[in-house]
Length: 555
Image 1: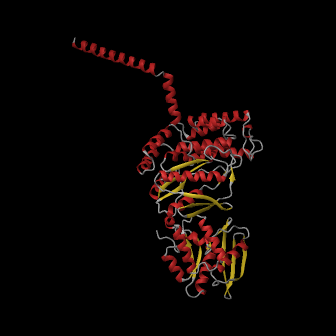
Image 2 (image 1 turned 30 degrees about the horizontal axis):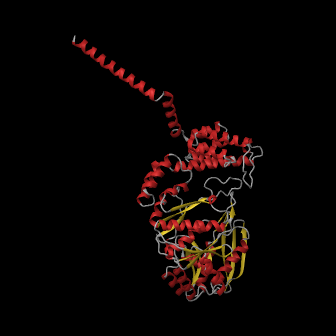
Image 3 (image 1 turned 120 degrees about the vertical axis):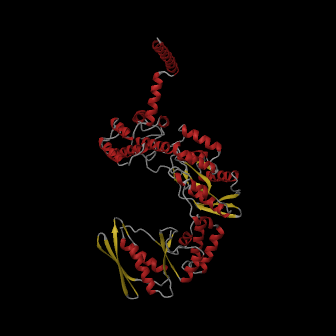
């Protein structure tokens, strides 16, 4: 009887559990219909589980690429050369270019390359681009958010060609791939702890990354402290009107952040394309490069000159901050539309310590570094060095007019290395890669340059250049009646000139008395930027003042 009672009791417990489970399932399916759960699961899997190999196969099945290209991509993927969706989109762009070169490419790719972008798309062309965009979405290569943005741009005629579409999709997917919070968030926390991101800026940036609202790397800097972003579409089309406006924005940013209080007394144009600012009792200048016109007919000065000028001012003020360029270059390919952010550029102000934090993610934050000597080269220090070069005779080969022209060039430049001063005054023989054409004249000119810079101590005559075959030649000349020669070996269009340099240095060492000689001039690394002729006294003084590096670094 006891066993029967226990069995009955167990049966009642199981029945009660089944009833509870049934009620629970009814509630779940009432609140979350089955089709929604399946759709959510499918969306999550389609976002995270579609492999690069599957996407490439979808490209082929949707006729987005040829069988030949597909097979090439399959091989590249096995070699690990195409690890991301953005790189797959680059393959589509490359194939689109190939189609343009074919006389019978499909109708979709019949948009001619034009010098002036089309203002409006024909409806048929727009529908073809929208279908192409839909196929990209179906393949799994772009996210839903990227699809929505690109669809808007196609409908607004911002995207006018297939290559435009592929490249913009590639750019946006690369940003999406780079901004995965699993990898990026720890770095953003480091930037926040070093006063580059405020607490509010950090929170907003995280939210916008999660919502896929960031479409270009430059947009990241809108959340950072001490940064200013410009879009030339928002400014006057007249160069001399928008430059002062941009300058005032930079001055305001420096003042509001407490970095520097710069009062600009006046702007002026001293000569064609030379722009001047008067501040703190000094005149600062830069050369405007020849302007170019973009789709919006706005002349663009090289934006690097903006921070060149302000960095010279900050350096003279003894500030530890410098401006770093965070601009995006306009697309130079003829026929490609100027898309979002192509006219956008800006600057962020950082200390050297803060700048180094960006190097860890340089593929996202592409900032150019400054030379370690840069902070020393104030206007006063540069003037001291020029006086010193004159005193030790390194400017004797120049006329007073040539010296003044060189000084003007220095004032209009951003000098960051001592060897740049020597270069402006034409005091050394620069190293150059000589192209295979006109080799004979090129080498004769090079040897004559060594003779010129030796100040008469190296006087070669009877200079000959003779080809031995298509990959080798011999250079010879006389010094003090003795013939010297060396062979040159060519690879493709370039030659290793070190043999010629070595020969000249050896000849000068043997034939020039009093210890004067040519020295290799390093740019602070292992790269030889030229050869400079110095007496012992000149060498000792230049090295004492740390103006030259005449041997490769030991580390």
